Length: 322
Ligand code: TXA
Ligand code: MG
Image (cartoon, rainbow, N blue to C red; front, top):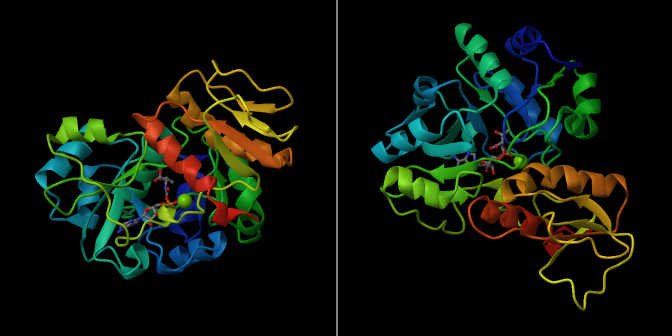
């Protein structure tokens, strides 16, 4: 059922149901982080591999520290500056964070979402002793993350409704791409997944140099080349001259870039921030229109532009072609 009443969501989640929830980044498919049966149903609903670790969503720093231990001082400063907000910290886990949540790793991912509905929900659950919600993005595994309740409905509605689970409608997501994931187990921050909170911001808040992610462990499913993909073939372009555009395909670029003749404009944001907000919706619209290709002219690769480039290049990866 699609609902707007937070109390109904609280009751359902405490009874072990799943509930898709709005956050400022993308919608998440939430379950009580203390309930192994509910958590296992998340993997079934998404068709997600069992060893992919989940992010725990909490209402505040005190709750975060129930799940994470030995957080370095720089990471606490970062959390204080950015939470609630699109930042996920990966830190050493406490015994509360089970193998099922962490994919067997000794680290756990935690964030405080900056969305009034989500925060209210988390606070009400906390009063009942539920200290967090695990919530991966509420899409089928490998598909584009949902940025409104209708997207969730299109991907997972059938499964959720058949099982008495809910979708809590909190409107459109403001940020539009997933949170920045920062590994906080060492002296220096490591960005595992770029997002709206940039390396420059992290460096200026913590006073520490951000290090590059080494390939391999720890696992971040968004690191798979084929993630975040629409059905349409995504093609990155950087000039309009000498392009052999397939007529009737889609086009996404900042507003100052004109739509090439014969292409369907899917988004024309004014800023890089707006580009992030609209990107996944534009991917989904391209698929609804059954377009063969979506051509994308990326915004400048700084700040959130780096996170946009990361998602678009993954969506454009040839391995995802079907
Ligand atoms: O903005 C977001 O982060 C959204 C909203 C719903 O909060 N969530 C989201 O979740 O993007 P998901 O599951 O689609 O992606 C979470 C990523 C995964 O790629 C997962 O591998 C990584 O977080 N992750 C979780 N725990 C981890 C850990 N202990 N070490 C490394 N990566 C971890
Ligand atoms: Mg995801």
